[in-house]
Image 1 (tube, rainbow, N blue to C red):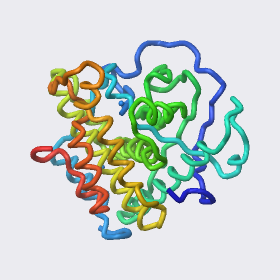
Image 2 (cartoon, rainbow, N blue to C red; image 1 turned 135 degrees about the vertical axis):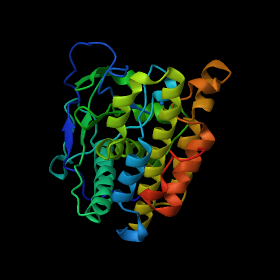
Image 3 (cartoon, one colour; image 1 turned 90 degrees about the vertical axis):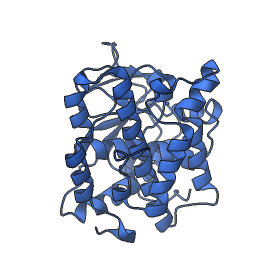
Image 4 (tube, rainbow, N blue to C red; image 1 turned 180 degrees about the horizontal axis):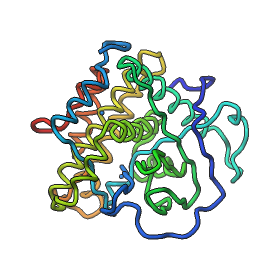
Length: 306
């Protein structure tokens, strides 16, 4: 990805090296406002408007995911940084290159979604991204690095320990900077779902769902976030940010963190009724759909089969 030298997001809260305090239980249970982890006319390129997306949500009464301690939940995060601090090292003494990278990616997502919302005469409320080391306190509760990157709707922030990218490469077999960018764009997709009503509707309705029903809805929500990540990849292509092989890196990442692939890797078999992120094939399909169309209106994972 051609990211060096580009503007970075200013929505960064760098808490690396600070520690996160005590742990008050999982932030990913069925309580209201729990966090969301991973292992949605006009505008550039004919993108559909947010208005049509909200219409889909209103008609279908979409809901969001129940998160448990399934290892497939260990994916998708997002981070950013201000250009004024881009040359500085973090508090932990780590090099700033990865922080700069996520800052650029997040700024590009802000540009995309800013355009989409502006086409509907709306402002895009940009999420804050928190970089942390080891553990962190959030509006959704306390979490640590084992949680993986996640989005907390309670404070509209994305949290990521950047060491996750080593895990993405070494454990999940998904190397490459655009695999990392896919992670970021996916979490921003969850933010879009939160501010357009998908996640709040889930919190309202999930108490009446069985675990299996909640898992099924969770799959649809995750696949929509994958599709939104694909929409961003389309935008990145229009901005001439893509290198040869970038889309293949993202598709490989989507494949490696499918529920079926992860379960088979860890336990030798898959249990479909426990899937809450989607199969490898589903994740690749929906990312590619968003990438090929560049239209968030084509990311309706809630109608028909997925």
